[in-house]
Image 1 (cartoon, rainbow, N blue to C red):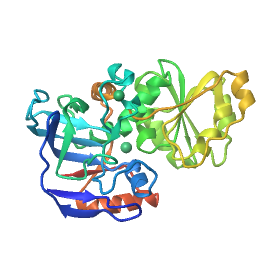
Image 2 (cartoon, helix red, strand yellow; image 1 turned 180 degrees about the vertical axis):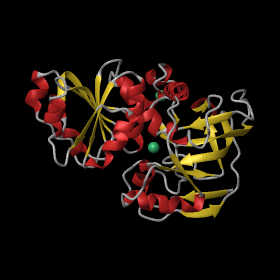
Image 3 (spheres, rainbow, N blue to C red; image 1 turned 30 degrees about the vertical axis):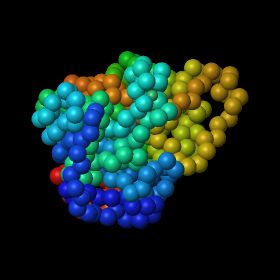
Image 4 (cartoon, protein in one colour; image 1 turned 30 degrees about the horizontal axis):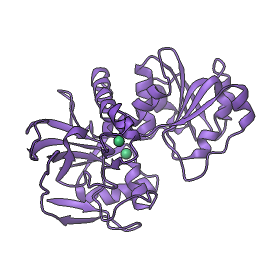
Length: 335
Ligand SMILES: [Zn+2]
Ligand SMILES: [Zn+2]
């Protein structure tokens, strides 16, 4: 099978021919239909994951079809269309795993960083960690739901987004754009914070009622003027400073939620946090049940990412574009 391999930090992907792997007990072999190119893949190559295993096949926004199952596997059956995500597997027996919060397991492994992922024609995945695709969901457009989608959807609900609540989203990239659409569909009122005015039209088209360009307007003051502030601010920008700059725009009892973050520490003024009982939380993608919910919600509300199909050989270039800030929309490798 053809696969793009990350061999070491700061090295370009190398496309090679490998043997198709065989599923062992508890595993399924998935013929990959599509795999999204995610900012995390770039972070892998930049060496931001000290726990990464090299060489590794990157990619954790996977859709495909089960073509073989390992010994003892009765589900999913051969022929099932599935998605696979950031969480590759977990220990299965700790308190978090037993609660269905496998994403919090200390032994969790990450697809495409610790275990081989989706930049290949086939992948061996864990039967209990793949998610059936709802009928009618286009497997190419759906690929980014496995990471950008679940991260945005799950972040919003863990952060308390609800009907009528005021939700601000920082950044309109993969996660941010999805967060705006989900929040609108949840019935929240939505503000978007971008650096320039460039994203304003897109934000309004997605259903945001307020757009703040942080390059010329203090985002905290602008949010505070929005009926007393946001109840939830979701940072989808790869910058901790962008998140910190909005803290004063939280309503009392509000939550600043990090889905995106930068290598810089998050520095916040503490007194207003105490006086207003503010919360800061962060949220990784989610557990298998969260992906089921994400796919069901996306399917029901027609929230499907805009994607640019590319070939495996174009993946390296797509990552370079992302690094240079040239990327427009989500690139998805199609096999
Ligand atoms: Zn566990
Ligand atoms: Zn991702």
